[in-house]
Image 1 (cartoon, rainbow, N blue to C red):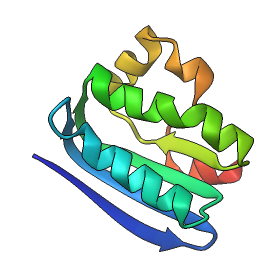
Image 2 (image 1 turned 45 degrees about the vertical axis):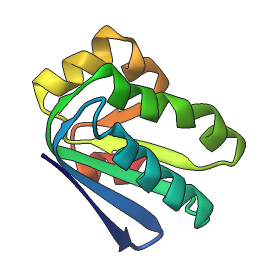
Image 3 (image 1 turned 60 degrees about the vertical axis):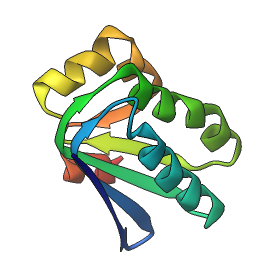
Image 4 (image 1 turned 180 degrees about the vertical axis):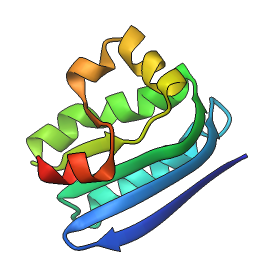
Amino acid sequence: MLTIETQKEDNHDLLIIKGEIDASNSVMLDQKMLDLKNAGSKSILVDGSGLEYISSAGLGVFMSYLEDFQEEEITLKIFSLSPRVFEVFKILGLDQLMSIYDSKQAALEV
């Protein structure tokens, strides 16, 4: 089961992800990211504290937006991933390509 909640916080759009992202529901994440991009968001914060699992399909969604976001000067910051989920990002080298922080506070300070 996956839920993705969107909130507006100051100048940031917050995506709160709970559950597991896999091939069957990664399209949900893709749609939320696309909606924020199309709405003109310039700062997207992803709360990964409730993310229990992410498959390559889910990681692919984040990857697919990296170039677009860079071109459009949209910042994407992910925070509060569990050690297990962070390890998946790290194994694939995504911790080098994406901004991943220990906490929301750390993400906001940068």
